[in-house]
Amino acid sequence: MGGGGFAIGGSVGLGDNFVIDAGYSADQGGSGSNDPSDGGITGAVEQSYIVQGTYISDGLIDAAIAYMRGNDGDDNEFTDTFAGLLNLDFGNFFVAGTVAFHDNGDDDDFSWMAGAGLQDLVFEGSEFGVYYAELPDYGDNDPQMVEAYLGIPVSQFLTITPAIIYGDLNEGADTDQWYGALRATFSF
Image (cartoon, rainbow, N blue to C red):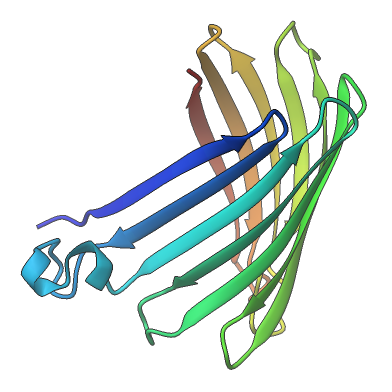
């Protein structure tokens, strides 16, 4: 049978400027099922949790802190990630970035991302952005990626965002790849 999994998340607004987000995701339970007698979704080999607190200003600075805990299922060791996010909004131009510290018990690593974007570049309501990231790696490879995207508002409730992504694992020959992505964002 095919794979499958489970994810759930939610957000709670605290006043006009603060939001708390939380989420949980898991693959199938211990024997590849979501059967409650076999551990169900909480007994999954791979699972992750996230909690994020966000300050959304009415002006220049938006910021967030996040905690994530997850595992890859291979050795059942969890990695704890502590992250900070910052966005500086100058009207139709923004600069944003993240920094994160990853601790899996045996190794530590640091990752970061920075980018910039323009609002209303192509037409009203659109958003064009480019980001560069150095991804976590517990060796000496320093994998990296670059993404360029264009958010296109279809209606007040739907935005379609095509993106081009380049990634390089820096593990020798043929570890760089180009990807395309298409995201749909529904707002209610």
